[in-house]
Image (cartoon, rainbow, N blue to C red; front, side):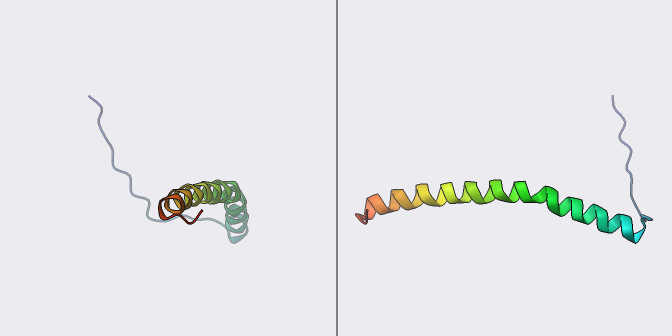
Length: 59
């Protein structure tokens, strides 16, 4: 069997400059993910809007 070990991180020592660089990279990396989420939301709204528009005779 596999034995599990619990790990608890209590403190992280990181220089401010490195933290700023990390946060900028994190922000830049999130841009493509947000684009994908927005595109999926637009597709979902178009599908739902088309269905309800057809059902209600608005289209």
